[in-house]
Length: 166
Length: 103
Image 1 (tube, each protein chain N blue to C red):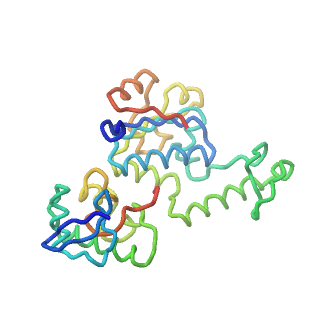
Image 2: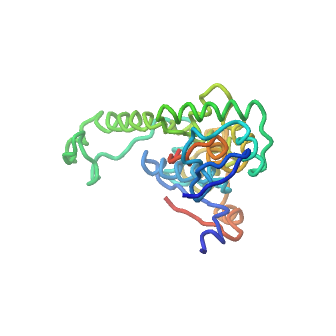
Image 3: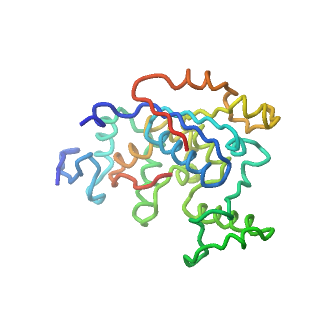
């Protein structure tokens, strides 16, 4: 079978969005790859930079307006108009984070540290940093390097490698 | 169901070599399975194996994070003890089923 003959050796994950669900999709995929012994590289760009910026990384939000999959506890649809009330987004986001904690899903910083402890590498996008006027010292200490897209692609070479865009 | 012989005893395993009955496991077997995985087990290894077996017996989900918070070893050390895929390797050596956890 092809997937036994050619197992995945490296995954390169790009995270370009900063909401809880987008960032955690990247972190769960990344950490999962590290746990399998797969070489793992995570590249954060645009709003995804929030996940590796010291100030923002542990207080990410989820969008509560215009999200048709958002439900109230109990399963009723979450009215978009409710989402515009100040504090609702923060409340829903805090609730989501506490639900994840119950499943032993760590906060963003700890999750990144787990990935790093297993040998995964975390990179930031130079262009997006210039755009948001961020400096290397604004980022979490574990960020290995600030890269151009070309430098990132150089790291993505090799057989049995996949690039995943979350 | 497949069977394998470890330390002279026939045990039940699944197609990937994980024990299907953790009660059949003992430390001599663990040493043999560890060797198959290229690991020379130390006391530290056994402390982790005991922790995983205990948690499994309680029906708890096994996660890398829980090992890191066990007080036995940090996550980096866990990757060092069972290089490559630590959770899977440790579960196999500990004689428990393959962990069904994503974190």
